[in-house]
Length: 207
Image: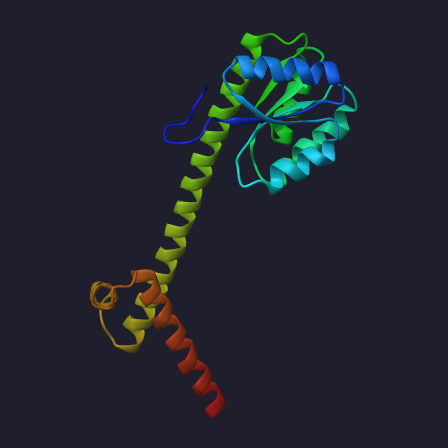
């Protein structure tokens, strides 16, 4: 079985309205070392299952018929819960491949299905999804740091204006409060900003 370190074997959900293809995909997926969790002939049941589950699945979805409708299913899953997804098409089509990637899948299989193709597509989808999640996490951390820096800069400005201290002295005051109260500097900055806003409102009310 293909396993993530310290985690259970990766689980696959398969959708195709055609029973023969579902069976073929299930067989080749199991032979590739993955566990088939569920197979579906109803696309909405697939969407509900993978988006409501507490487990991150790999999704194999047949898009050979009603391509636009199937692409919308991939978009729906991606919007609700980004997962590793592989589309199954009739033939290798670069234009369709681009649409598949744009919809939210990471790889595409072409019929007839071969076990080595299934193994490669699943591995690619897992890798690309993992890479995408890392990039999103890094971006979120950068945004958080930027937001914290803006708070600290604003709080420094308030201290410099109200206490008539230098920029470095204002920074040290925030840093000391952070250490003394065991709070992040951004939290201390938020308190300073809130206090300054309260004073401003009180003065405005008095006038």
